[in-house]
Amino acid sequence: YRWWDIHLATVFLFINIVALGLSSLHWTFTLKNGGHSVAKLLGGRLTSIDSKKPNEKRLINIVEEMAIASGIPIPPVYILDHEWNINALVSGTTKNNAVICVTKGSIEYLNREELQGVIAHEFSHIFSGDMKCNMRLIIWLHGLYALSTLGNLLMLPFKQLYLSIINLPRIIADGIEAKAAGRPQELPKNDLFPFGIFFSFLHFCYFPLA
Image (tube, rainbow, N blue to C red; front, side, top):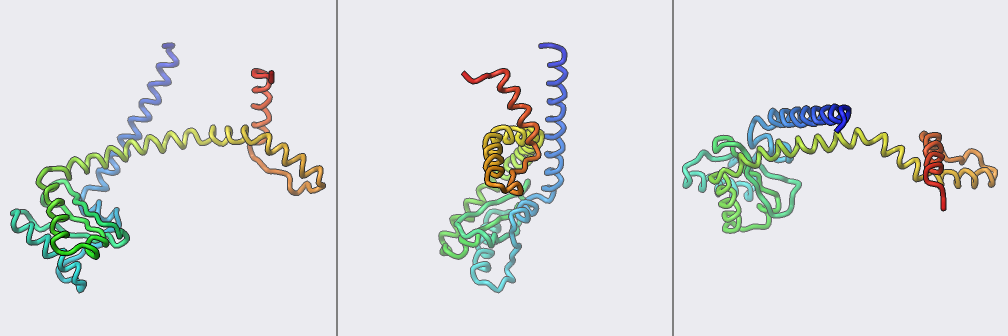
């Protein structure tokens, strides 16, 4: 590699590391409250045994029964009111800050035995340590997503230029049609039109038509 290639690669590597680090740090602080942070990000609503809805009381009773039988603190329960499919999840970093999120469809469509099976499955995640791994994956995946977003932002000017070039024939044809029809107010407007003409000229010079 030439020296300027190495320097350029070093600069891009440094930018990627900084973007990954800042994004991961941001999500580390965002999720510092453990499962409560994830539940709120999902739009969950905290419920309790004092709820006036029978289905939610039944859910709380099931969670309390399994927590007491398992010997762990009773995890808070969130309801995902906007989700009508049958699903549930548990999030957190330890048994002490774990929360259970259950979709609206689960408490509406499942009977007690079926709901017990769903909650039992979520308790298995608490004991297996999957929650901590999932929280780390959330942080790292958002870091990678930040790199993708940064790349899209950096490529945006080139994308606009590319679109201007490939749309140049249509723009010219529309302009000729508007002039021929005597309607100059309908001339196409394109901020990158001069650049499109310039690059089209270069393309013609280096890649002439056969």
